[in-house]
Amino acid sequence: IRLWIYMTRMRLMEMERPSWECLEQMHRATGPQGVGSSNGALCLVISRANHSCINNCYHGWVDGRERLFCDADIASGEEICTNYIQWHLTTDQRQRELQTQFGFACDCPACMQAESLQKKHDAIRLKIGQLDQSIPELYPMPSKAVALVEQVLSLYEKLGR
View 1 (cartoon, rainbow, N blue to C red):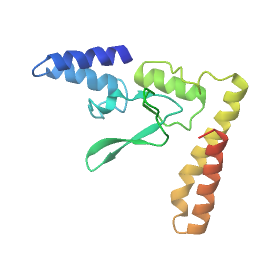
View 2 (cartoon, one colour):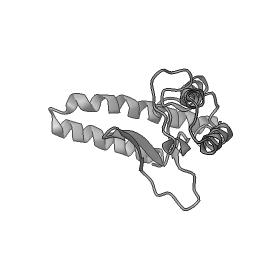
View 3 (cartoon, rainbow, N blue to C red):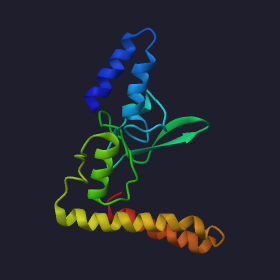
View 4 (tube, rainbow, N blue to C red):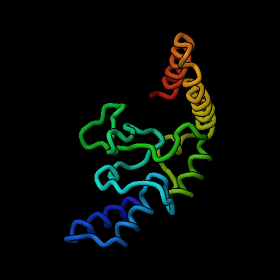
């Protein structure tokens, strides 16, 4: 998929005015909701970030623009990787969702770990996802919300993040 995106970008750069069909094809393949989605955006610069289940940045919308935010130091020459899907799924769930929505199998370090380590990390990811969903419910109780956030952060550390 990386080669396809690069080749598509090159075709766009060669065109004075890209055709609607070309833009629509790129959007369907690279939109944030995946292949065949009617929701998403075509972000030519931000689409250069590839996927990894152990991302070094994340993307989000600010003031009507999609932005990349680093959440780890990125060395010169290191690939910039975001997560295309919810990262707190199991390895099997992530692989299935990436294949279905984006048409590729992930080969990042998290997906290529030994099965015993994958199971351990999958359990931690699922727990983080559960706790993360509970945090907004605790906004009226700040001390409980902070305790929950601290628990989530300790689980992140167990993943080496």
